[in-house]
Length: 444
Image 1 (cartoon, rainbow, N blue to C red):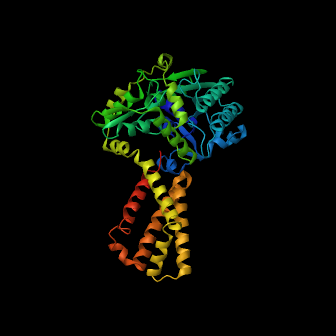
Image 2 (cartoon, rainbow, N blue to C red; image 1 turned 45 degrees about the horizontal axis):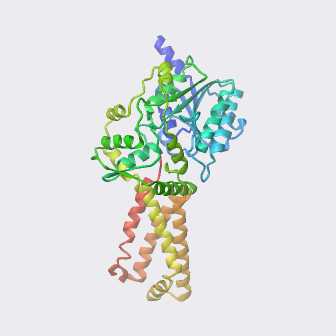
């Protein structure tokens, strides 16, 4: 009878989780739903999340645009506590790190206070109180201070690098690096990490959402051992079943090129974990003291080796790790391919295009229109693939255009199928690569 009553009370608890389809947010939702709580979740793109978890009350909105306390009023109606899991590494296309981490986040906190919602669990990052090498850590610390100044039952959690069965950002990068064939790059100027498991993080959230849990605490969530980035990657490599690699030191100048490439990708809307902001944060490291966390919650953080041993790697993990770097590579190659074919059609290849049109019996006016129109279309497809926001539509369009070119080429100049350079045959590998890029496009 008493157990039934406790479960009934638990079911009445309703929580708002922001960043609900992120690595931490989705795991928090799964844990709270398992404990019979009712969940309202906020995220920017809810299509996939809503299909995966139809039992969750999803709200689609851009967190960074909810910059006033009144913007949160409807979302907070009937809510007992809030878990804020939102975080972005740096500003980029459509993202402003200050607007997300400070303006919108503080507006949420103030809205909680106005609505009488006492308990707020907020995710920050380990070490932000000691050093702020980037806008990420500066803005996280600013939000922490704003929350601590409010009359709320707040809990600020500062996790180290979070690793779990799901992978996103740094956790996905580690798998990709671990699967490189025969070698493992050692990046310069990286400090130690005390990686923490996703299960331990979600257990901590569940603990602090209990009505009788302590509050007004700032806790570091760190694992029990200090490891270098290379040691973590080697642990994943062993877990995946790959042989011991050759360690190759990456020169600082080459490392900077990788970070700049990541910054450029971020400007196009992608979210690569390798960026200049990440480099500065890696130089600071992610270490802390988990003793207070354990003392208060009773949670003994698992070591990386223990966590990996508890869940043996599957073939799906191996596929993901081996394909990790093929995703950006496929986007780069396909974007370059279509941009260059467009430029070639409008430039040095224009005369060759005219000759093919004439051979196919197409008049000069229509031939010119087809060559110029096709070249411009190819160029725009390449640009569309490069931009994350339009990449999906551009990839599908490129498949349609490639098939159209094959049909038109067959009708007008069928001899191209026998051409020793195989211009018609090469269309099909490009289509397959495009389909693979579509399959790998999602980050989470």
